[in-house]
Length: 137
Image 1 (tube, rainbow, N blue to C red):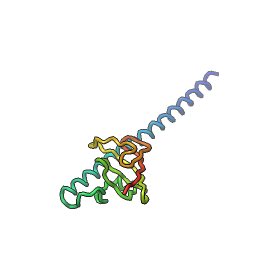
Image 2: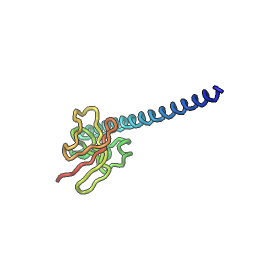
Image 3: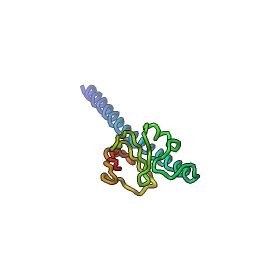
Image 4: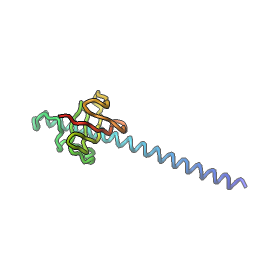
């Protein structure tokens, strides 16, 4: 009689382990994705600086498309620019509002704060934050 109970308990434990492992795996993938995006943002920043230093482009806030790393392009940005050494990826924009991803790169010492320069930050996944920004003219 004990055999069915042990078998049921064993199957239950196995299901719990698979479920927990699956949840941890998703969290690791999300964090890895954020780290990958941070690396892509830093790569974009470095490409931009090199192009600027070579005098091939003027010193402007917007980062030209030819500097965007592949993972940045995959976000389908409307524009990409720098904010205090971090990379802003605008995915939606209207006349007075921008929305998208704000990526903190490792060389930046600025910790983004809601309220600074019209930014409001939402979900954070490591160095990647969702943002909404009121654009002032």
